[in-house]
Structures are given as C-alpha cells and as structure tokens.
Length: 129
Image 1 (cartoon, rainbow, N blue to C red):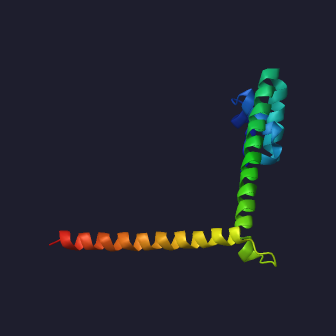
Image 2: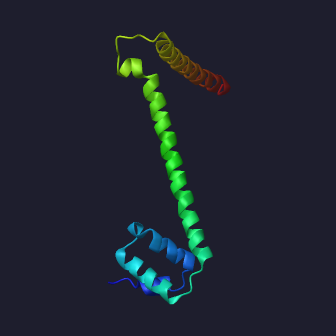
C-alpha cells in the first residue's frame, strides 16, 4: 500500500511544507519531493522562509545550549570525583574534603529516611489501637 503524500500535504501551509523541505533528513524522500513540488506550485513569501529559518535556528540553539549544559555538568562531576577516579601523586585536600562531606551528607540523609520510616510505622501502630 502506497501512501499518497500529495493528498496529505496539499492542505499544509507553506511554512509546514518549508519545514519538511529544510530538514529532509527528518522525512521520507518521497515526502520531501512532494513537498517541494507543492511549494513550486505556490507563491512562497520571504517572510515564510524567514519564519522557518528562525524556527530551526531556535531549535538548533536550544539543542546546542543543552549540549553545552550537559558538557559543563559532566566536566564538573569529573572534576569533583577526580581524586577517586584518577588518583595521582598530587593530593588536593579541598577535593577530598568535598567528597568526605558528600559521604557524610548521604549518610545523614539515609539516617533521616530510616528514622522517618520508623516514626511512621510507630505512629501507625499506635493509631490502630
């Protein structure tokens, strides 16, 4: 069964068709050919082309910012755990103190969790009486 892209795309706006044509890797080749053919039959304004270009520029900038943010986080995490993952001859006390404080914080959180769990169990036990 063949899909009729022309019937599907004939009512699409120029900007929607331009989005298909500008990012052909996101669509089937037949869809891009049909979208191009329909656009050739229509009058496409410069504003529509600019709108689609800005649309993809915003998407690309957002993806780039997201990658940079993830990269910065990875770099920070790698730097934080560097004394454990890549021990060297130079000992940096500040990094070891930070890791020690993290371990103490995790232990404290675990103690709080268990205490809250026991408290809930105790309260539930005495309220059933």
